[in-house]
Every structure is written in structure tokens, then in C-alpha cells.
Length: 152
Image (tube, rainbow, N blue to C red; front, side, top):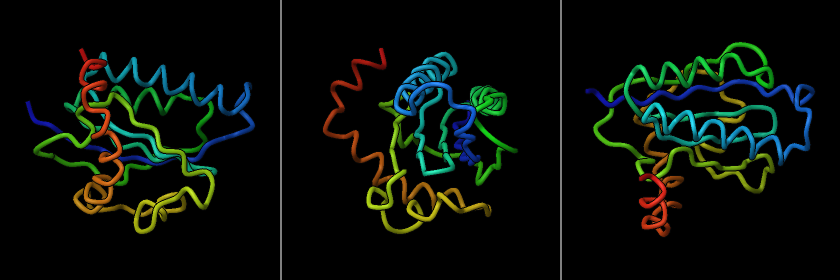
């Protein structure tokens, strides 16, 4: 089975959010993590003020199911844009069904490509994005034993 990575972006329709934003985010993350676990998909969601970027890793069917689910989410506006897709040797987020990074506040955003993704709409090279995401994935390393137990 070939391991693939896929990254997409889409706009958030905050008018479709019926609960307080923090509650809605927690519910959406819990649902996405359950789906990822069923599909053997790992990855990360990067939340910007009006956009989200999601990096997914797994087999082609699992990735397709995750993107299909997102495409039907009424809180997301417009089309999902695939930023990159390709085969990868290893997972960046192998110890986490879905890592969450909140970049809604400007001072929380990292420098470089990840800081710019909140407004980025053009295609990217997966390897460039993967290189940037290594720093995000490094936040999981101190909790590797806890996360390994959670992935049972």
C-alpha cells in the first residue's frame, strides 16, 4: 500500500457556525479524529482567521473519504482547493490522528510558508510544505508516549 499525502485549503463560513467558535472547533476536531482513525489517516489542521489548511497522510481511499467529508461540511464555503498531493515515504504526524494549530491570531502564526498559507491559493510543492510542517510535527515529540498510547 502506497502512503500518500494531500493538502487542501478552503474558506470558513463563520455565519454557519451555530455554537461558540471554541465549542464548534472542538466538536469538529473530535469528529475528524474519529473519521481519521477509521480511515487510517493522520495529519494536521491549521486554522487561520477565514481559512483552514489540512494536511492528510494515508492511503488514497482514506484521503478521498476525508476530503469528501470536508466537501460536505456546511461551515466551509466554496470549493476545496488541493494545494498538493503525492506519495511520501513516512508520516509526519504518525503519532496523531489530527494535530490542531490555531493561527487565527497574527502573532501565533509562524514565519515562512506556514504563516502565508492563510491567504495562499496557489499550488505548492508537497516537499516544500512537508519541510515546513516538520516544525509543527515536532511539537508532538515531547508527548510521544502519550500519543502512542492513544493510537492503540
